[in-house]
Image (tube, rainbow, N blue to C red; front, side):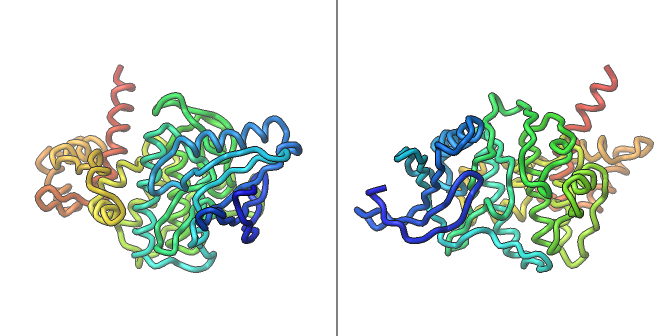
Length: 334
């Protein structure tokens, strides 16, 4: 710690304190998370060292940057980037301005897209783990509960996270994958847009039951249909039908917003799906199979307001659900 001057105490994390410090040689500010190793159980020390390993492997504008790690006097020190705008502020009872929600959503999707491409699940996505700079740049942090999967389609079963943000599959102690982060994003967006979380009961058991079985209150019509469609798709209790971060970044309004924060190269894998593919998926997933293809096509164009190769939010979201539906149909017909 001789290299740093402690400015102030920021708060307590899962296993220790967070301090705002300045490097003596440069004056640059950082956050140091201190973890008293002597008081940790083997499992807790494993969590702390796991965060170090995950953080040190990640490099993305929308992920809190790892700087250094050292152990001194029986205490682990994790040095990381300081976000001078504090935590994401989601106030209960207060609806966030929708323009601001779109900006935050685009940056969260960019961060999650990167994490999931690195086979990392966050598993505790919530306002307290989302940090801002004074320029409103957003960064995902606090990876103490994160998990590295052996490959992108792998599943895990550990029961971790913050109750109101837990996905149904985690509450049911089923296997889960990156779609658990997408559920948490849906809860976060719902809370931003409505001023309250979709599932909140008197105790944890009731909250878990509500998450698994209860519907949520529909959002106000004053919220744009595009945002409501995204939130509803993320809060699908079947993880297979939830969109991924890549799926969301294909939506024109979100893609345009994301380009304010990244280069076009970062979105090269989120190009819009061709219209004919959407029509096919819409026919398979939504259509009454007694309708003709022409009737379904007319319905699709009317409902989604297709214009050239520009497609609606609902249409893009239908792709991820439709692909899974086709897989389900294929399984049933074997």
